[in-house]
Amino acid sequence: MEVQFKIIRQTQDSSPRIQTYKLEVEPGNTILECLNRIKWELDGTLAFRKNCRNTICGSCGMRINGRSALACKENITSELARLEQIAASSSAPTASNGIPEITIAPMGNMPVIKDLVVDMKRFWGNLNKVEPYVSTQSRDIPEREFLQTPEERAKLNQMGNCILCGACYSECNALEVNPEFAGPHALAKAQRMIADNRDDHTEERLEDYNQGTEGVWGCTRCFNCNTACPMEVAPMDQITKIKHEILERKNAGDSTAIRHRKVLVDLVKQGGWVDERKFGILVIGNYFRDVKALLGLGPLGLKMLTRGKFPLSFEPSEGTKTVRSLIESVQRLEQQK
Image 1: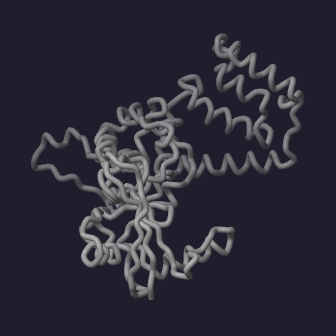
Image 2: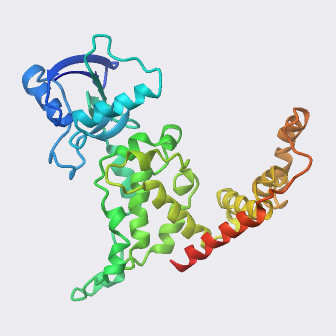
Image 3: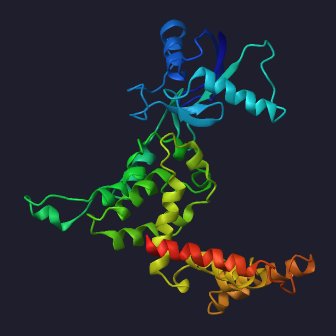
């Protein structure tokens, strides 16, 4: 079958351009195999990364039809089926000549070096900042082994599956607006250290990951990293676990991010949903303790009142008891872990 590949090409000093290649392919061919043939048979100047060809090294990360994935994992059949599903549920245009099209672009949130090759310097730098290695005083005793039970080791398996391909980093909305955010890849590795019973720097790590929007509070919980991850690491879930560890150790007055989480849960437990009248005052105003912040809410509050956006009364949800029971059940389960 014939497939048309539209590849976004550029260099560091040029604007992106689309170059089209037509190729006779087999349904089971991977995208990486097709890129290899384009380079070997049609255009030797095309640049992309590759290595293992077997979903192990993570080198061939790129955007395939708008979402970050591994070129060695995705094949022609599955990709065209995905495009058909998208076309069936939207008004997306199809190829005018009837030939299936696959668009390939470099990963996002990283500057392009050439074609599909991106500069991952910040990606690796952010990973290094979380110190993704076991730190323990037992290193001072050479003959001592780092023994773990199967149950203790099993807690590390999901995060250990990360191959650092960059797919989650590429799709991260938080990084698009906040370049200082550590990124889902780094924080997933950070959770591996928190869960590792051999590490003795847990408290110091949690303090580091709790800093502003550079750490876990910079996550927007958009689920893009979970969707993009080819290894089912679920980075956002790992970030949430770190947040829970921090929340267990902190009081609501410690920071706005922590108050936001605690006040949200408390208000939902009280009334079944969020009481907007209290939320901003308790979170921004720190339970009426931060007078300057409270005064800063004044102009916004007046605008909301004049436009009818500020509720003067609060009606608790009819399902408040059910909601409260669910929250308390989840909290009990978390304490048992």
